[in-house]
Image (cartoon, rainbow, N blue to C red; front, side):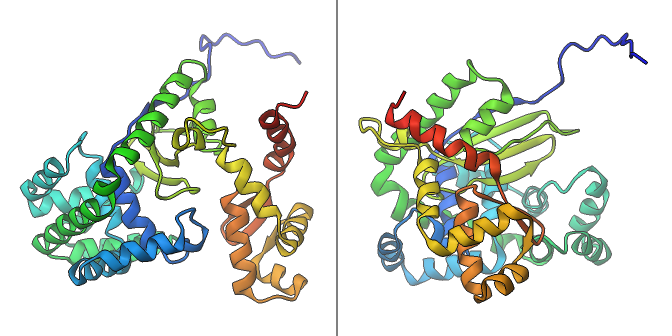
Length: 348
């Protein structure tokens, strides 16, 4: 039987996209990057450069970075940066200092979804029961259960002092010496995305900016914010605000090397990832079907640490997808590699 539609909706609803950039986002993401031990060896940030930066920090700053690593306060910085369009460090610090303890903690706890809003409010009011309920619901999240407990119990005065010092210390040591270079990169990338915004629909723009993230419209999300970064390349970092999805995405090679004939960063990343026998064997297994880390180590006869390292590199190149504890190959990305290479080389 044929279906007759009397509906009036002409187009599927989607979200709007807003592009933002600033050196303050770059600073907060830099703090996040250097305190994430599990991803450090996958960053494009060279180890010798990281070591030089760490060596230049005061002992007090090292202590603050250790505090970030323990409590994930980089998340607090990102949450606070979304509360206004801050352009200057002094402006951001004044904002933090002017917050009441209640406001600080309210901003620090991320949006967990509409059904958890009541529990979130109870947590902010000091309810241990609400904390335990949320921790149980979020037990599979890598850091939120501990982060919620920390925000609930930490002294607001102590947290404000920490946030101000770690942000200022990073900005002065890492951002300011390269301020002109970093600002130019972020501005170029911001402008390039805004230009493409006129040529693409919202979903196409997000996929292009993030090098392959297909973010389909979902209920309750009316906006996507795209924020370029240099420090966390090649990774995208995702976050949720109420009604908003945020992608802190890796700035394109063309924004970093505007005068050079430089290939797209993901094209390079993907071919690098494939230039290893073990990773090719891992990828072949995953293209044949989904595997857990345990099943891969059993089939390949290698240690979990070794296989996990190779999986991280394949994931960073978007050649592999992960859902929970299960990994699988990403055929769409693999099939696009030849086309991307031909387009870059100018072959007909």
